[in-house]
Image (spheres, rainbow, N blue to C red):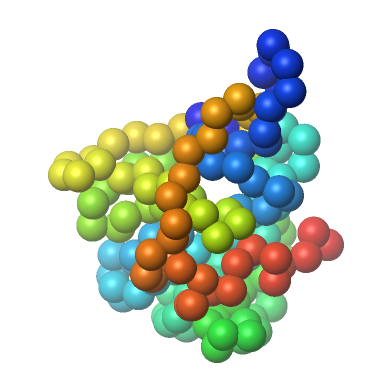
Length: 154
């Protein structure tokens, strides 16, 4: 889980155990277009705000049907900066081995999906003493998206 304010000493700001420094992404494989995509979030206190959607396929941006400004990232992916960012204190996700939802931050990844079937995952911002992650592998290794730093807080 992602929550802010754990007792018992200093901790690291995490989302579901993945250390974050102001921003993170939820990467996944789009079920219709079979294209890597990511939702980009910034972290403010106990809340996190979805600012953009990034994908190697412009069709994924169309699928969201959200108002915003489209551009290309340094790596050539498509980005939709949301006209009306959505803020959460908690986010419940259904994860599957097909969509492979994965948290991404600081070049590290934390898979959220089960080996088979489906699972529900609840994300919050928290301070934790132990962090979980692994090096990112394709398609989440940064080659496609370039990371959440491309999206400003404004």
